[in-house]
Image (cartoon, rainbow, N blue to C red; front, side, top):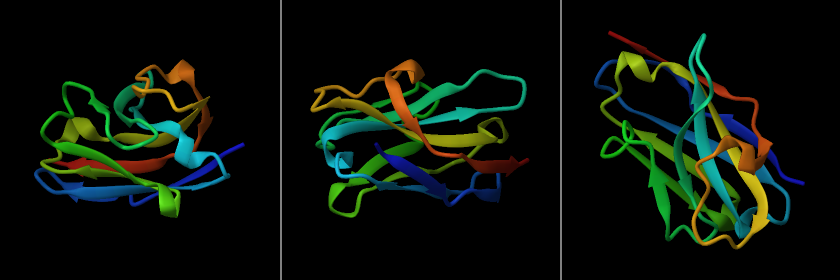
Length: 127
């Protein structure tokens, strides 16, 4: 069992930056892939970025490439999402998630493969 708590959301102007954090409890955090997803009002939850258990492999949605960076600190059971050059269309609730399968080489990009979810943190980007 892994419990996840996001923090770091807020209101920022277009072009600004935010760093989201996700703190995890549970002994298996360091052995599983984790990811960030987001959901805007009236839209389905979508993939943002993911990172495998070791941190060596990351994957990004096309819109996140070059602007967002995912990272993790297994010693602190924490993951991060650094978001730069934010746009109004990035406005959404951002969720961190962890999968159940250990030591997968590549981190999944599909929400259905993630078993544990945080409660979400709101990110609002003003024009």
